Length: 115
Image (cartoon, rainbow, N blue to C red; front, top):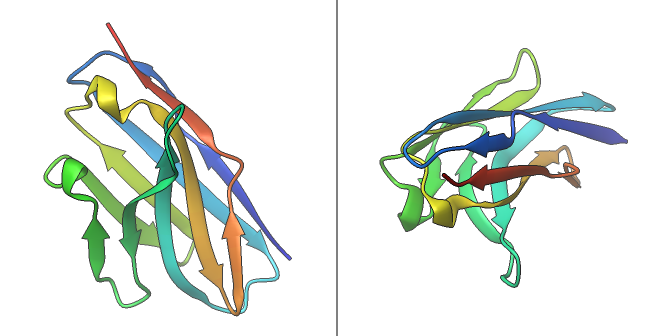
């Protein structure tokens, strides 16, 4: 069983930055793709960014050039650096980790962008 612990959310003004972290622990044989999703009130959960085990990345168009995903496999951790935040980035952010043959979700961390 794999546990994911997220941190780094909070309240930030438009134009500000936040860095999310998600640390995986437990029965980890190997790590495949690691990524971040978000869900705003009244909207479906969407993929924000993902990084494969080989290092390739993909982003939703709305965050390209502003968000950067990275990972440290030695620490079983994935990060999301969010710059130039906008009010429309407000959502609960969830990390998603493929570990071995399992898919795992974090508990979610709230990001609120407001003046």
